[in-house]
Amino acid sequence: MTFLPNPCELRGLRDLPGCTTLLALPPEIDLCNAAPLFDRVMTAVDARGDRLRLLVLDLTATHFMDTQGARLVDDVRRRLRPGVRCVVAADPEGVCRRVMELTGLRRDVPVYDGLDEALAS
View 1: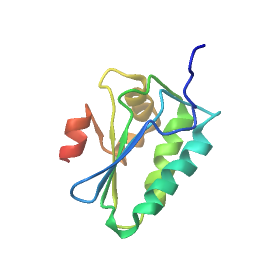
View 2: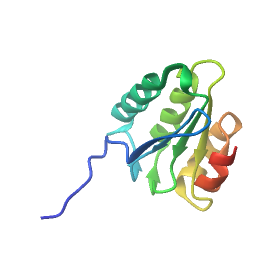
View 3: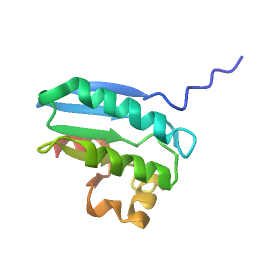
């Protein structure tokens, strides 16, 4: 039997020093799972309350994302409390980075080449 991950689950959630939360998103983000993923991301964000200052969305293992993924990132950014920054870690040659460039979202959300760069921001 082959195990297929739930496409609506976050791959990982970690609280890091400096009021930083790292959320690893699934391998694919599209129309089928963007809305439930948004709910899960916001539940995680709301659970951190005032302790959150930096939200890092990890797309380094996401190999497919359409415009719904870009909308997900933008909706999360817009729903964050004032003073909370949102950054994205993405493969420099990957689809996620390209979708964020084509949609213009990179103007509003910093995209870093890897997780280490995003966490150092």
